[in-house]
Length: 376
Image (cartoon, rainbow, N blue to C red):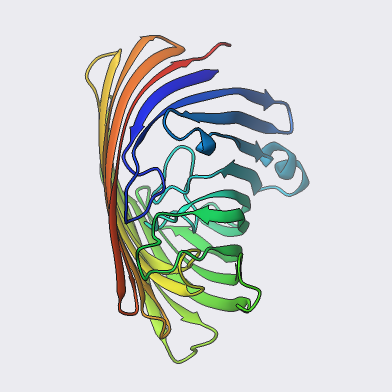
């Protein structure tokens, strides 16, 4: 497969001050491999990402995006009846750090509405998820994930006329969760889980800045329901405690509502949890995020989509750090025939960074026309 795009970028450095715009040509060749046997099902996707800047050729880059997924249910069922296991790996290397979830940046602890300055970075997410069917109505779920973000070199920033720091921090996050789920009825399921996360934050530029390590203990109750043939809902309230501040209990939430029929898909979600900061300061953030998305198939060839996100991230300690961001996007896709599509997409983002008494505000707009070809 290959995608060739031409896009307009209003703020190529993702910062305040003098905002620099440019036209960028993106060329992204890749391949997808799917495998299935009596024991394993899996898929691999690899994409090279190259961008050519018309006015700022010194920013030209080549990056990569890799995804791997393996379902070992058939193998584990032969060993232990009722046991299922899934392994996944996602890695991306390029100088842009999406603030919200995108096809190039899947859901992780790093997609929380924070728009960092332009800088080469490697993001990796390795995960293992297991399920054991204890009884016909009860199953036990367990998962582990290792999330890494590493910055390479120094940031190319346009925040120099602001008092807000442009420091970047490497993150290492170990996450473990475990708990049972019980099917109350054909349409309703409830469960509980314990979640433990160990967070390491390290400065990329100043040896004098010490590493920041913390542990987060949490628990949640989950309710999932099939409200109708098209409508599904989930709500998971919980509590978390940071090891450095054992007397401070933080309430958490994950909630979502999804509608889907033959032509339309609509979804709204809300999350609140504790996540690490990788920009401005080494800190843990209480992050609130709301997202909504809608897509509609006008015909077998035309599809339109809209989305919006809003996030507020506030430091848990005394650092006085706050990120606020909002993003909206839209797309129109036309399929000539299976394997050949043309799409037009646009997005707008507003970002506010508050650090003590200093504030930085900037926005970013993009418009892109893409042509994609796939061969089997």
